[in-house]
Length: 479
Image (cartoon, rainbow, N blue to C red):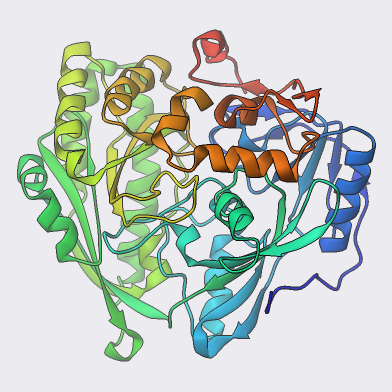
């Protein structure tokens, strides 16, 4: 496939194993071997040797998934050296990106080429391959997830072969692997389509939550990128509307002091303090939330797209997010409001609502339908299982599909009816990894296929802070 090639650096061999933890501290794993290959040839060598020895391999990124999607106790494949942005056809917006490139570095590299990522979520510390594998997305009714910009992949298959795939070349493998949970092969390079660099004119303000829900469909279509936050125990939505502008219109960024005050002092420092106080004294949470919404004042500014899309998130949290049929979001959120009131939960973290266009990728939670995303978060030091599983019942009843990188209880049997091409994805997985080289207990749970090629899926020593009933006893474990 034009534009995708192997790297040129020599590769490194395995390094000593150390415990691996994800960002939210919901997963800890103890791999026997940690490999940090320096190029694609090194990745292929590691995979081929592991497969020949009957070992399993899990590729890892920056650890921003709350689920054990990257966890394994055998070979952990760290792609930190497979980085960089290489122009392929800048006039057409095509670039080749190393799989281990973090999203913030991707934005910086694209800007030097006069390009940008079409849409981003609010965290840019993930690697590109990891973000794609789990269906990471931003917001915007006319914009798909990050995977919608992918035009091709280079993959190392379970036998060590390097292949390319796209809509034209091995289209089934491409449709399965672009949001593939690392189950179909190790992505080494991504051919990405990017628009010319652009500005976002941001309008951030408060509105009554009831009014936002009543006009939800119209509101999400009125600006390019719309999202809102709702702090439980309040009647206010914190709305963010971003409109795309060409660079030629000129930026009008926030003054440095205002950005520091809002994004570091209030959104991180003060928020961490209020979450701690609310965890220790739950009765204070409603008052704290009302004060928190008042502390965030409206603001308007215009800046480079990646600077507006993303923000620093220094307060650790546990998160569940479901993709819902967009038209159903208002009533679903109202039902969640009623549930919170009935259960008497005291919740210092806001719920977040975003939207996206349908995706083509078979395993994207936004596959084939206009989507609204409802994110439910809880402070990292607070109990969370009862809250998340309770809300999950509402989201499951609404035919929601869980984000692959965030906590949920769903299994392959639950998920198969929700994805029209789920069986096709399973078929492709069996074809490209018949011996289960990339298998893990978590993939077995969410994708099915306990026996691949006659060999049981591996066990693991990973410690998982999970939502499943059998793992709830782990939830107080200090990870």
